[in-house]
Image (cartoon, rainbow, N blue to C red; front, side):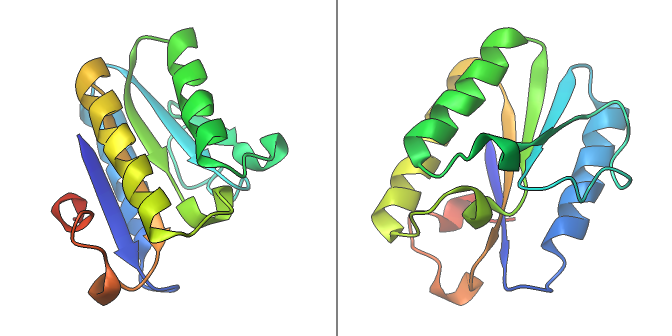
Length: 137
């Protein structure tokens, strides 16, 4: 399952994501991974969640991010939740078609591997592509 938290800067996306991380840790039976550009969430999320500072990996492209997610999961099949904060800070390409293609890949991967993904994106909800709208929370 893929859920997207979308809104403009300052709309409370990260706070909502942190709440969902806390809920996943307290109610879940598997491992929780949080990917962010910098370690700003260190003291906001429970220590049981694995916080990954993706800024030290220079992700940049969607292909790299796909491999990054797949590699993390390959190292730990007990992961039930992935949270990605500030998505557009991780990838350099904001092209609408590229974002849609990535979300489709993520949805297929989530279903195949039985993982829940929550992604926060700084973007105007009113200008969201139709293909992304079913994933918005």
